[in-house]
Length: 379
Image (tube, helix red, strand yellow):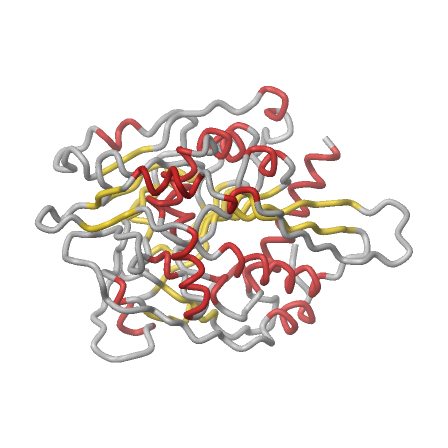
């Protein structure tokens, strides 16, 4: 489905929000210091960064060890706090002369990271689409009941280890895996969300990372370096282009971003071969557990099971694309680093669309959700 030109004109009107990449606070080897330094900065401005740090501060650097230490006591305190009982933000478009509007609920995982920024851009995108036949609801997801009410889900940028840990300790990790891999509902992960949705991830700490899975890819975490090396770059994203009309590049924000290092063989089971390669080390790689598609939805998603990974966007040479000086070229070949992928109803981006004023990707994704939901309801 092609998106009308008028839609994109509205989606890109908002100016790019200035990124606040934060100060360098982590030591060498401390890849996922949660407090104040990780891509949890999700930098929608200093206020958003402070808000994110207030929501979760569950990691600290242990001097001399060069590894992440997670304070489970602080995670327990967060999980039992009133934050997880806060009301969900809901937004709907008023319908005009509609007898029976189709209601679609989009959830944004709100355990840590830039979930509020996603909700703001979802609101903008839904207003741009302005379909009189759809009533949109956008909610923050912190428990299984809220997740069950969703037709689609966004896992925001943040700190992947913290999100995974809080989800596990709040009994939400398995329901998330079921949502994505068993029930096959549309899901989009940004940055940390892409890591969690991958079937395999490098540069992980033993006992500090659990994956959800859904994308047959291996990601390399913190591919471009530490917090201070975060950057903005122009991307050509073919799925946003209009027929016979050139669109300006998408201004992407990369904050300690992962890249897709390898497209894996498509399979329903666990990617066990990823753990059998030589040289990965005891704690260098983690894979997502296997999940079988639910029998009641297998017929609905028959065309999706076994579908391979599509490359949706690349960063073609960091040195050429990055605004600024002193950046050296990098990439997995001349084609550039893979920074956006899709496999059936699962979509992932290594950058942060939620931290810009550009709603084009959110508009596009909502249209994919509409198609998937309508197809499922008609089957």
